[in-house]
Image 1: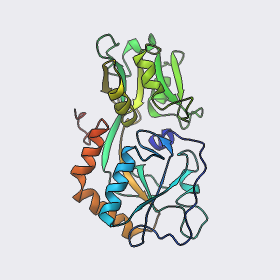
Image 2: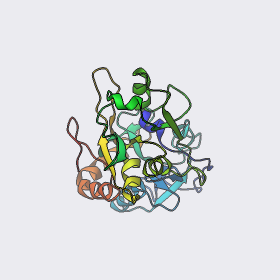
Image 3: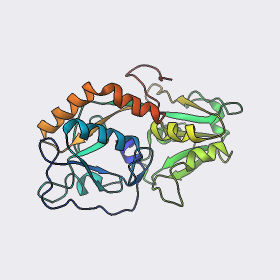
Length: 276
């Protein structure tokens, strides 16, 4: 899934589980695998919204949270949850696309969308990928280097012949390439507009001194989808834990939504508009 493939990654190697650790949902630890440098989703300081949600879930289960850190890139599930260890390195990934088939995903606990980001007062006021202005302005996008895993908006821009004016930003974050780089570029005028996955956009837009607009990217006829439901992923076959998580999603939905709102995540209802 493009949302998961686009998730920023790091080079950090995993921390293996301690001997004797037990899986969540009946054990002594709520074992989570997460990216150590992927704000606003997660980091090793546990400052991301997925960290906050993991702690909420762990508290509900009555278990302490324990992390295995691994860069969220190709092979993430294989090397963490499905690692060739007796129990794998973790039991839960807090954010996976709804329907992601490498895990057993819960029901979606939020839904977000790709957004256009541009200065509120003097931006190009883009509302659609079919806007002719997109052929004349500098557009910041995340690129993975492999056309088959680039985010959906990049595919759709290419179909429309919008290629030469794209400014690519890496999703492999580091001190030299901070996660905020693409939104910083909008604020400082290096690009005129950026197209960014909503959770990352909202968090960094909120931190800018320059007022920035966030406008959902609509899918036209024949376009790839730009809205995605995000679930929690458990190891395939772990029905008990999946059921526990879905119950917590239902009973703690208001608290989960508050965490997302605190991070300025643009939320959408299925087949509905952007919540402000």
